Amino acid sequence: MTSQVEHPSDVVCRYDVVRGDTERLAAPLSPEDQTVQSMPDVSPTKWHRAHVTWFFETFVLSENEPDFAPFHDKYWFLFNSYYEAIGPRYSRPMRGVITRPGAHDVADYRRNVDDRMRDLITTVDGGTLEKIRPIIELGFHHEQQHQELLLMDIKHVLSLNPIQPKYTDAPLVTGTAGRLGWQEYSGGFVEMGHAGGGFSFDNELPRHRLWLEPYRLSDRLVTNGEWLEFMADGGYQRPALWLSDGWAKITTEGWRAPFYWQEIDGVWLEHTMHGTHPVDPNLPVCHVSHYEADAFATWAGKRLPTEAEWENAAAGEPVVEPSGDLHPKPANPSATGLKQLYGECWQWTSSSYLPYPGFHPAAGAIGEYNGKFMSSQMVLRGSCAFTPKGHARNSYRNFFPPGARWPLTGLRLADGGQPS
Image 1 (cartoon, helix red, strand yellow):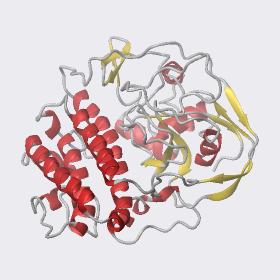
Image 2 (image 1 turned 90 degrees about the vertical axis):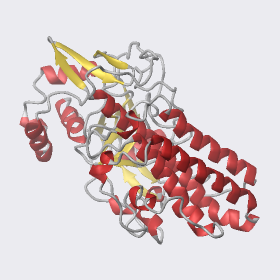
Image 3 (image 1 turned 180 degrees about the vertical axis):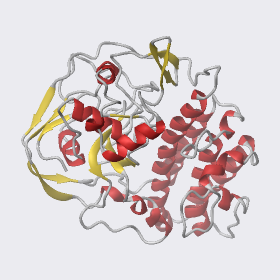
């Protein structure tokens, strides 16, 4: 994480923007919507709103506010996510049974902490502000992560409602994806990891060198139409295409299509934040697990890129901010270079989520932010349609278990090179 000197009013302005964005995302949801936990991986909307508030109260106010007292002593137990050093926490799979505090009570909590944060930022001396600003900055990016998760989670909640409610009335963006092409890269010794000049999470560091064999990446994401071809060719019925754990998963759970697809009267439909629609063959396939992505790549005679290959290729491309649409859009067939790197789907790689050479987690509870999850996870790169503006960069390492399907995940193919 890096920092630059900022005037207190600028820090407050950024704070208000990030906090306001969370409330804007929650605004279309009723208190009942915000209470439901539809599966253990999903957290209620009001929990997300409270947890990011807990973060500022715990890591900023408790350490720096004169005569600090928590807004509510039980909130430290209810809204701690996984920070063992902070103390005990409520069971994650049971978050949905907490009807109180309600969504309006959480709003009171947010307002209280916001007032105290603004007061702290504008009254501490300059040296103290510079000392605490990195943790405030981390809080901004932490809240943006939860903004993305809030949308992923409420999408699952609404998908289970038989009246098929929409999160947004905006129409889906459609178009023609065009033929899949390839971009070639020479490889060689490359540098990888955050290069400085802005914020990064600790798992993006340290920057280091490594060798890449020559390789190719597909110039766009895999589409629904291509996935339908995979399905028609028995993709979910052919064990030779699948990793062993993946085959066990799909046979145990009965997978035969991406997560939000359902077949009714011979027609495949897809649940989206814009409602339920017939599957559009030109849109990127999304909500597929690493197991499914790997099986598709094997079926196509290709592979998934390593995270180093993805980052090396993306280093020459601009970071494109999300459009505000809440579903991946088709690739622009007239565009050149790598398309859909950002703002559509998080892209599975073949890389396990492991520390970079020389990585050391931060001291204290903050050190639990990323390092403790460096096992049994796979790396994804890019960003998705739910990612907040200003949150993406080419060194960003997202990660999920290989069987996860509820995140907004898709895939890009690779060829040549040397898979890891």
